[in-house]
Length: 470
Ligand code: NAI
Image (cartoon, rainbow, N blue to C red):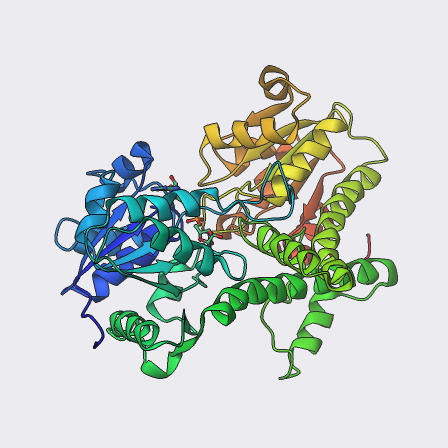
């Protein structure tokens, strides 16, 4: 057997990963027809929106979709047809942390992966290469293979590949256009290697061959968890050091810069902040913790769990610093929170630090004014309600006001808290903000974003992560 030439790809899951990834494949491979399917009709309608109001915000994404939608890129709710027509299927469904049952709070919920796999087995009538794109625990491919083989029609063979996605939200399109590496895991059998070759040839349309790494299935699955755990560990490490800076008078920016000059360490991901968020870091580390525990490696589990615990500590430490600085009470005081997305250049709010901060401020009975340039109002209410299950939405709305600009949000506030590093927050007219605030006017910079000297000259009292107070 020689590797199949991939002509039709279907991607199951039109989310933050499936959408951008497969849109870029369509853009770079005009000879391949790419269909992205999802059960969520609203999402598919948005991907097909005439005005290109896509369901996710990602710089550069609209241009990619505009260049190939309707030519070789299609979005559809017809999952079965997509499966039947494709020779290669990406499974890019969500794998959130389990909320109940065995492993609740740690293990990945593989229900969506299993349902998608069962659907493939049920409707496929020809050979398929099935590519695990979702982030999954090590050896999930084996379960997928068992399900597919047990339910396959006669003469239908399935080859499973692992091809984890390393894109970061906010820079997804440039990450996809110029990936550091593409990782493909396969069984080391002749058929497995052929399937690997077929997928490699898709990426080779634009990714240099030396950046396409081919490895065993289990190494590929574990490498994704390992990469996220190590990235998050760098953030927790620098955040742990930021606490020491605040207590000693050292400056975290200077420390990070000095440390990052060491070529063995490097400058990236050494920016202290109010804590990491996003749908992946916490989930994937907890997944690794669960994996370690299942393998009877409790010390390894404790080691990785600490990365997540440090992140929680960083968020609550920052909220406490706000309360302490505002003379130990924020009851009935107006606090402005700038930013709700978990980081700049995305509308994604999953595990965003802003959610925890606002929840803590609500507990202290503060009034909160909030502004984010991209996050939809409905999403904000949903996140805040989930974070405070004991409060009715009506009561939350009494304490929180969503504003349509930074200036509006800062009016009459005692303090401004920067929770997301949106570029536009750098360019705020701070003079005007200062005029409209109660005095003393505080700015808490949770993202090392603003020019502290400039704001101090205007009259603000500026409190920055990783720098001693006032
Ligand atoms: P998402 O929640 O944005 O999208 C998943 C989509 O799959 C949803 O639209 C859902 O309706 C759809 N879906 C679920 N089951 C389905 C089924 N049986 N048939 C058809 N559609 C189905 O999730 P996201 O963020 O795209 O993540 C997907 C996977 O990629 C996860 O495993 C995640 O860990 C991983 N990942 C995420 C990254 C990120 O930055 N968001 C980066 C790298 C990997």
